[in-house]
Image 1: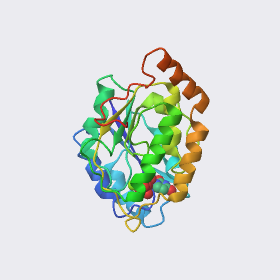
Image 2: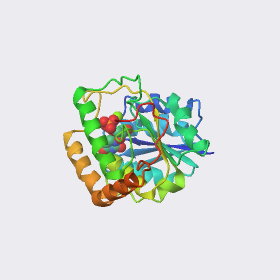
Image 3: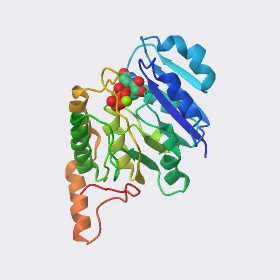
Image 4: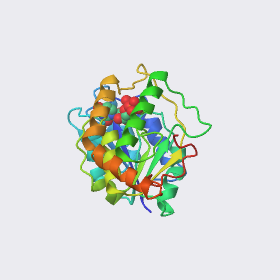
Length: 257
Ligand code: UDP
Ligand code: MG
């Protein structure tokens, strides 16, 4: 199956080249790498033509900064592979882990795979406030979607292309993560989690997500998920029938309680 990697990039002069090189030598060699430059002003633009373009299949430019969701709307729309991986342009996630991420789709067991930073025995390097925010947002998202994720906000989201291209991405910024999760849940397709590693960066190193994005995430969970009432009703009905109300989310070795 052909693999497309979509890289949203805004002011990542210090990491973009190293990241793209790591993607190219991933054990799961991508067939297509698409970099979407989201209006960088830090000098990233200057290296796109000279250093980056020769290493990738496509470079797409946003004239002005619009946000990660907007960059992904553009990049996902341009993808032609059978499988699409989202890859941030910093070095927080490791492209060596693509084989684990694509395996459930290649094996026909899943349509969507999330890489969780909170798998058993993992201790991702992450600030406490970020850890708490991730936990709260993931639990809230699960409540609305009926999914049983441990890391909704992860960058490593992998999709069968036709599934993700059928979704209209409305959020321009980091609201993309809860929005896509909610809309994927509504399709009823098979979502798996696999454990991945993570080395978080600081704001000094270029991190852009902030507390306002956390607030926006809560609004997006409510806005894009199936109505809470319908979700609770379905789960209650399943429980009364004696079955499990959870959709099968496998592979993560530590599901939430
Ligand atoms: N990004 C983007 N446009 C923006 C902000 C971020 O394309 O306006 C990209 C950024 O370059 C990175 C990814 O989105 O590749 C995630 O951003 P960041 O690492 O700051 O967020 P976090 O890792 O905290 O989710
Ligand atoms: Mg990041």
